[in-house]
Image 1 (cartoon, each protein chain N blue to C red):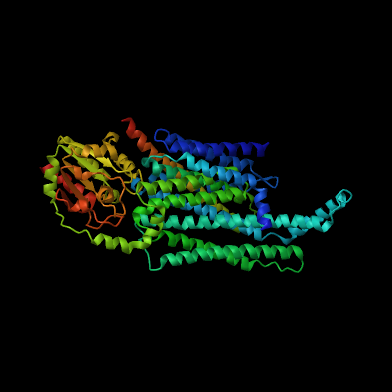
Image 2 (cartoon, rainbow over the protein chains, first blue to last red):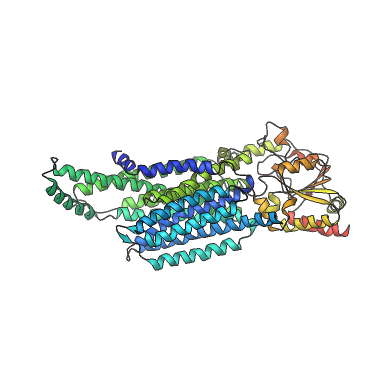
Amino acid sequence: MDNILSFLHQHIELIYIIILSVFLGVEVISRVPAVLHTPLMSGANAIHGVVIIGAIIVMGKAEQDNYLALILGFLAVILGTINVVGGFVVTDRMLEMFKGKKKQ
Amino acid sequence: MGPSILSLIYLIGSVTFILGLKMLSKPDTARKGNLIAAAGMFLAIFGTIFLYKSDGQYLHNYSWIFAGLLIGTIVGVLAAKKVKMTAMPEMVSMFNGMGGACAALISVVEFNHLVTLDPDIFLKLIPPVEKLHGVLQSVLEGDKNRLVNDMVSNMLGDARGQLLIILLGMIIGAVSFAGSVIAWGKLNGSIRDFSFKGQHVVNLLVMAAILVGAVVLMVSTGTKLEAMVAAPADTPVSWTTIHLIFYTILLLSIVYGVLFVLPIGGADMPVVISLLNSFTGVAAACGGFLYNNPVMLTGGILVGSAGTILTILMCKAMNRSLKNVLIGSFGGGQAAAAAGKEQGNYKEISMTDAAVVLAYANKVMIVPGYGLAVAQAQHACHELEKLLGEKGAEVKYAIHPVAGRMPGHMNVLLAEADVPYEKLLEMEEANAELATTDVVLVLGANDVVNPAAKNDPASPIYGMPILEVELARLVIVNKRSMKPGYAGIENELFFQPKTSMLFGDAKQVLQQLLTEIKQV
């Protein structure tokens, strides 16, 4: 218990960031029209692809002979990239259609 | 220099995510918002690759990293460009699953990193402390053991905290991954709804097993580390049991993800995808905590909280509670019983009669629904609308906010078929025009046109805003059968005198209508 508390104490700034971000996330999208639900979900999906940074760090720290870390890290980088790139491209495709139609 | 530039890059990244999300929630700025977030992501990724330092060293294995990025980019772009607009929801789900898997994999590697800690690391740490002690002896009154103990206890605390975060990231990521894959399979029709008696009990048991496993793992790892530090020489370094528990938890998390999504009905799937989306956000944030990385933390948590609100908003638009969506799947029996009570007589209309009615109508309103999306009939629908327009009729579409497979999905589908934007009426506009409409053509929509939402306080969808199609002079409903929609309730509209049923797959029916109308 003491250990956990001291861990929290050491990371108190991160915990502040987490709590503030929770409120920010709620505020930012609290009044979104239903038409945008799907693109917004897809865009948010691409943003959580930021987890790829973790994959890059894992991969970039792995020792040359640590095959488990290398292989899993490599896989994680691929999956994370698909999440990020695919997510942003698909969202853009969806939104492009809305825009094109409005101009006509 | 490098690390401080990197912190600045992470700060910019976090700001672009917030800005991007904000802009994505307004129609005129949505596209720009998406691009801004993408730019921030690009910056954060390349900043990490070149500027990140761990233990004073830059990252290595560049060829692996770039190979991974290249493969992922090619697959991601191809998948995103090739996917049909109708298949968009399952694509989003698949991408989400990849993110979840990525988070879980990171946790697996970091777990191995943590528990294969060389016990010598602890020993190596002690001599410097001893030296330090010698230096500080004159200054410090405290004894050596206390200093060493403090140091060790700090390290143990850190190891425990890290293990907790690793476990959280792994469990949430794995559940999100497995759930998303099942959701993808269900949306594209390769996996069917599946539920068995006592499923919620099994789900709870699996969840309990995961929690117990996590606690056991935390405690036994802690004990092991303590023993190792207390008597390094005597402790045989065997982590087999701990590995076993860890991978069992991973397996159970995957099983839980599968069981959790399997019974949920097709039309509730958007809500579940949105929920899994916010799960992956939280898993990503765990990574941020682990690496002390603010951009991962803010990105993950933003999506986690925004996704949760989005999920609730979606539920509200369908007048369902989140609890209902998640547990409702277990109450299938009740809905079926309710469905039986309100049977009546319905009448069918022949293809030829329907064609005649449409061909001579002055004002036609098309109500597209789930059935149209499933049949991918949006192009045939646009053809019909053009043909009727050429014959002098005024044709418009009435779009319910939750028509289709996801909120807003119908607008995207029709846009894909080049239906002019101004022909799409939102619910309020459509309701105002329905009273002056000659014929309403309902294409595979159920609950969004169910008058029970207005008239029957006992109905599960009571209170949901609907398209009041019964105001029009004549209603033609195309459905594949008389089966009720996803809410599982009978629609009295179908039994009203002004309603006629036209059974069949939306695409085939529309194509036949086209040929018939050309002959009128």
